[in-house]
Image 1 (cartoon, rainbow, N blue to C red):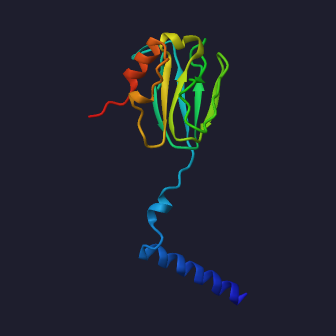
Image 2 (cartoon, rainbow, N blue to C red):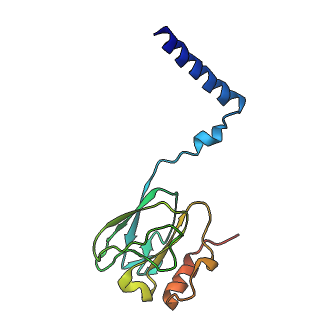
Image 3 (cartoon, rainbow, N blue to C red):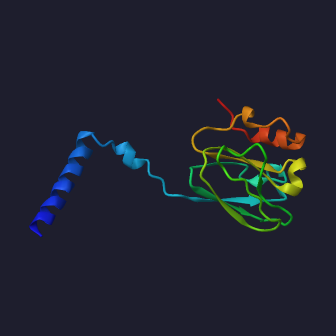
Length: 157
């Protein structure tokens, strides 16, 4: 029993020593992330115009979830072919139904409402620290979807 107590005290002392002397960076401990659930509404209209996702640009961390709410009828959320990071899994929600997805792969995810894709109902999800740029947009986007993406891309400067 005394040996177990001494071992426990020694381990605590060593851990504290490593933390205070910089051998175990505090930043490494701070990098842990508790997964979050983010909500996105699928709407007929908002201040930004017709057929938006709200928000239209979302920044999350790997392992976070996104819950798409069919706030207005007639919408779904689905990934856009060619706009899923390598290793990521495409998804398609049903019309008028809520869908929750967990995004583990870092990169830019393109999301569409299937029935309103050609009318520009799209959004971007940035997983991780690298913001979307025009080079993330595939060449074969419908014109209205391309324009909406260009409108919602983060502005530099």
